[in-house]
Image (cartoon, rainbow, N blue to C red; front, side, top):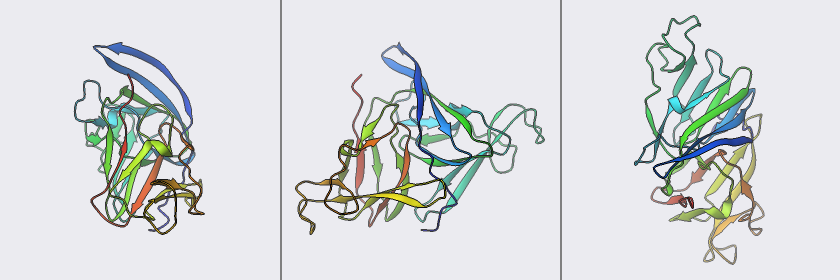
Length: 242
């Protein structure tokens, strides 16, 4: 995988500052500190009333400038889609602030994206990113590919690596975390009790292949790359207790 043109910024929660209950739907918003440069983001809410586990770009707002963008990656770690934040006061003559295709005129705010998807947010000056919507009541299941999947903790609360349950994974499949220079700074590995490393239980381990990271926190909204040897597996984050 190439360097990804990215920089990981820790998605620090400024707070789940508003939460109300409507017809058993827990709704609210979360503020994430966006980096100067790139932030790996796994949006933490689905659309209000959603039953399919999806969100839209319109649920992501914040202190964006014209040209700030969201980058989507494929299994090779290459950017395949970029959507841009444009303002009505900007040079492109759009009618409303929001997300637009790379022709700088077609709105994409209503484009649906599966829950569990992560991407890289590029901001010229950094600033707050706000994600609003409904807490998903369903398990978040991410299928693996032979290559890379951009995913993460798509819950509005912290989890641990132990909460990321793997199935059909191969020993050595891993989760990669990036720093502000776009370099991998942390890699945790999926190892099985039946594998060659002699670990006592299936789960996520540090790069010494023996120390469990099951209790290590993965902050809300943190995005990462899941690197797998083959298709056909899954990682699952359980439904919340509401």
